[in-house]
Length: 196
Length: 281
Image (tube, rainbow over all chains, first blue to last red; front, side):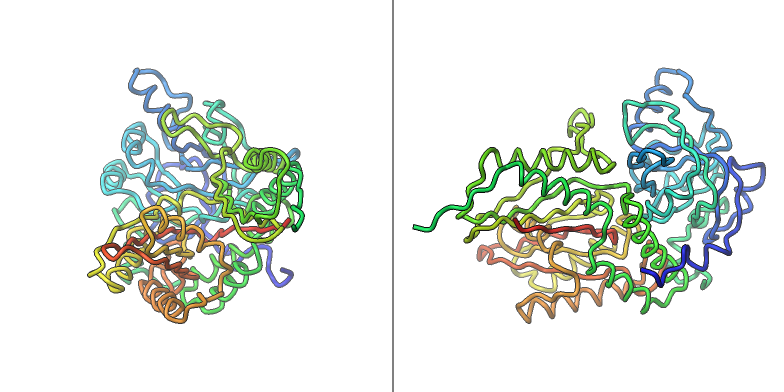
C-alpha cells in the first residue's frame, strides 16, 4: 500500500499532553480535542480491576499509586523478541464501569479505552474532575509503535490482563469526557460537535 | 468405487497454524478495499483520517507481522469436510493443535478463559469448530478470529412472524444503535434469519465469512441487505462513534426456512478489523 503516508495528516497537528497529568492539564482539555500523549501511564483491564478491588476490600495497599495517573484499558498481544510490546489498542471501557468510581476516589485522573461510559462513571468523573479518553480501537499495530517502553508491574499470572507501566510517545487519543461534564459521543449524536 | 482420499491430521494442524498467524496479521483484499471505499466517501474529516489510520495500521501489521488488533480473538473455525476424505488421526484435535501452535508461535494474544473461574487456558484453545459434511474430496478451512468487543454487542430475538420484515429490520438497526461506539465501527453486520434458535446464530456468524461486496444470490435478500445498510449508515454514529456516513461497511443476511410459528433473528456484530482467511486442502 505504497500510496499511504506513515501517519494520517491529522496526527501532525495534535495537542501534546504530558503524562502523568500535571496540575491543571486534564482540566484544560475539552471534549472532542485530539491529543498526543507522551510520558508514563498504567494499564489494566478486567482481571487487574478485579484484583485491585479485592485488595481495596481487604484494606491493603495497591501495587501502584494511581493519583494523577492515566489508566489505559488494554490487553496487549505478546512482544516478539526485540520489540517493546505487541499490538496494544484499547479494549471496551464499559466493562470497567463498575470499578472506575472507586479508583477515581483514589485520585486516578484519567482513563482511556473505547466506547461510552455509564452515567455513574460520568458523574464520578465530574465530581473528581477526571477525564476519559478514547484511543483508536482496532489500530493496535500502529499504537504498538507509540509505546517506547513496557514494564510488568503486577499480576503477572493474569497474562495479557496484567498491570503494566507503559512509556508512550506521540500516542494519539480523543477526549470523550471532559471535566465540564461534556461527552463527545453525545455531542456527535446531537450534531453539536464542531466539524473537524 | 471411488477411492477415499487420505490426509494426515498433521497436515491439517500445520494448515491451521499458518492460517491462524496469517489471519492475525493480514487483512484480506475485500476488507481493505471496503475501508478504502469508505475513506473516499467519508464526509467527516476526523472519521476520514481515522479510516486512513486503519489502512496504515493494516499495512504495518502485514509488514511487521504484528497483529492488526491485540484482540486476536476466539478462534472460530468453519470446516467443510469432503465426505470422500479420510483424515488419519484425530481431526478436531489436529485443528486445536494448529490453533495452539499458531497463537504461540505467532505472538498472538491468548484470550480464552474458563467461564466460571475466568482462568486463562493459556493456549487460546479450545477453538470453536463448526464442521459441515459436504460432497467431494477436499477440506475447506475458514478461520475467523473473533474479537469480543464486537461479539459482546451481538444479540438474538425470537420474533413472532407477525413482526415480519419490519420487525426484523428494526431489531438489526436497534442492535447497532445500542452498540454505539463500543464494537469498533465501521462494522460488518451478520444476520441469521429463520431456522431455529441455534441455527439463526450460526448463520449470522457464517455470513461474516462471505467476501465483502458480494451480494446474496437471492435478489430479495440482496435488496434487504442494501436497505438495512443504508438505514444503519443514516444513523450518523460513524467510524468509532465520531460521526459521518460509515457506521457499517456491509450487512450480510443468511436466511433459512423457519417454523410457521417462528421468526428467529440473530445479529452478529463484527468490527472493522475483520480478519478471515481460508484454505482448501
